Length: 333
Image 1 (cartoon, rainbow, N blue to C red):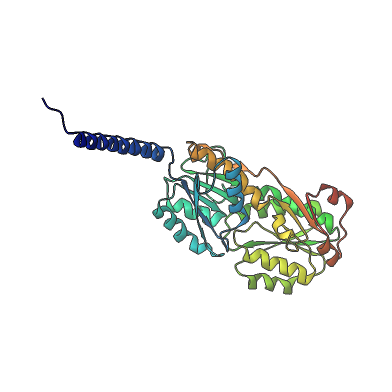
Image 2: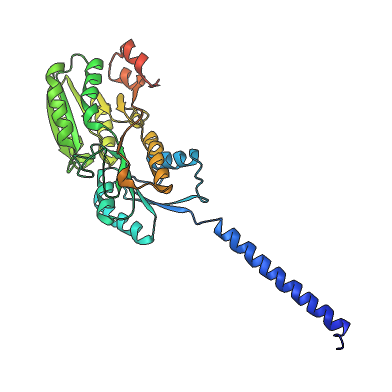
């Protein structure tokens, strides 16, 4: 049998090589595709006024420390309600419908909205004062269903905040406990405060507020010897108004986070927003690794900071004892 002409033999050989190359390239592309999965999508629902809330930044930083790079391993879709708790249900629902893999929520309203939006996707929360009192979980050790997160321990810390105020203002005789209207966790903290008040010789006045105007009206009722104790709040509006009231009326106030001392608050005792996000990142990483949210115990905050602003102390004519300065984690001068 006669062979093919040289030109045809060469053409067939080149065609075979091209086909082999195409097959090898396709296989290599397929292998590359298999080793580069899509980033794990984290939907964030928060009442914050912007996407760069310290707790969200802490979450991102914590995941980065654990080796999960944004863009490569994880991606974020942040929906912020600009201080409006009534906007959180729509935000949570939209995130679920967008196909995220996990919901991260900050505050009670956002977490309840996340729970209402899904009973399947894992939910990790932070900045929740009292998860049991809020009805988010039935048991801290075994949260069950699809929810876990970080508790601020606000109920437990409320008497300590009163103690700090009384240390700075020994002559004080009345403390205002100011909390957001609709805060289902405030009753537990208020009960602890009332139990502790006789030990410090003070009367407790509680007040629900919904707007900065409500806070401003408290100013008409303040009298010498009064102090302000700000409950943990999801929205920034009310604490901002309390800070302004404290400075304008020269009334000592204690806040739940050093964030407020950085903006002129006298003193704070409680967890840092950024640190809560960093701590929550460990729970998120475990879930990404295959753990079930409901089987991860709710954690209390790891770090509780004491912060003092000496400029504000001078403005309010408050003498800060040396023992407080030695205990303080942050001192603003």
